[in-house]
Image 1 (cartoon, one colour):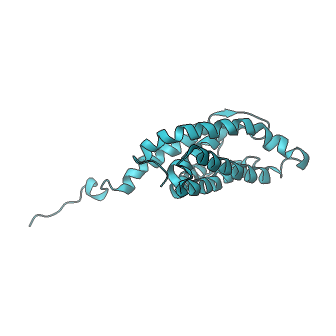
Image 2: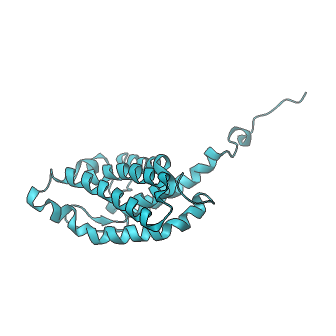
Length: 191
């Protein structure tokens, strides 16, 4: 009888789990890249992060999409410069943009859940799911930003400047989504 020797390959067989790692890492890097697309404003910059979060959630669903966003938030909390304008650390969560960051995770869950319920199958439903995800981000962001801005100027600082960009990001994500499915799964849709 031959003695079996353990090889690296036998320990990490290319199972579905191991094949997921490059996919999730790729989406994580997409979020980081989107954070660096930034237009500075006094308290909260306009960034590509919302686009990234919505695309990740629609493509991966609530569990994997939320996992990618959570990993991104943990990277930033641990000091990696992955947030807008290369910022990092727990102080970012405690600053004016902290609510928006928390909103990213909640939006990934909500939007991903809708994608899993076939809201990713038509353009109109996809846009609607992403609008709802965006609303979640802004509700969380504004609730926290209210600690830094007087109530009478909260919408002027934390919402109104972002509406045109949100429209563009949602439209772009809805257009790109079918192409992204080719990399996520051949049959398309969230999982």
